Every structure is written in structure tokens, then in C-alpha cells.
Image (cartoon, rainbow, N blue to C red):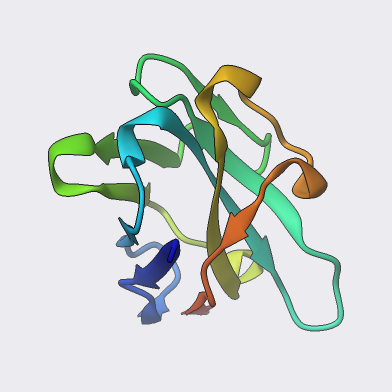
Length: 125
């Protein structure tokens, strides 16, 4: 059974940092691309960043460029999202998701097959 579990969220001050983790089980993690998405209250889910199965390619939404870094450790079956200089507008539930590595990187929600349940990130001013 495929499972993705996010962790690392919390309540921080604006300007602080957080590192989110996405632990995968039930399949060969190293053959899947990973994406991070977020959903703020009253808003649609939006793309944050994605990383290829090998970790050699990454893709970011404009909102996170220069502040967020996506990475992965295939030996630990875990993906990460390092978030620096957090802003109040980054407040949302953050989700990780995956898709077959052969399909390439994508920012489209429907392109991802398996999803975690999310972790709450709150950055207060």
C-alpha cells in the first residue's frame, strides 16, 4: 500500500524557517517524482515545487523561488521542502504527492497520483 506522510509543519514567526518532510512507503521511492502543494483557507490548492526521481531537476512556483528548496534522500525514502523567510501568506496546509518518474516534472495537480494528508504551516506576523 502506497503511503506518503508529511511532517515538520508548525507555528512560526514571519521570517523564520521550517523544513517539511515527506516519508514514502509501499513502493520504490527513487523511481517517482515528488511535488509539494499547498492550500490556504478559502483558496484552491496550488503548486509549490517539484523534484525529479533522481533529484537532478527541480521546478518552483514563483511564490517560492529564492526562499524554498526542494530536495530528497532516496536512501531514506524521504522528500523535503526547506522554507526560509516565511511570510504570513505562506500559511497553508502543505501536501506532498508523487508521480511516475518517466512522466517528468509537473505543476498540475491532476498529474499526481498519490497524496499525503498534509501538514499545517502557520507563519504569523
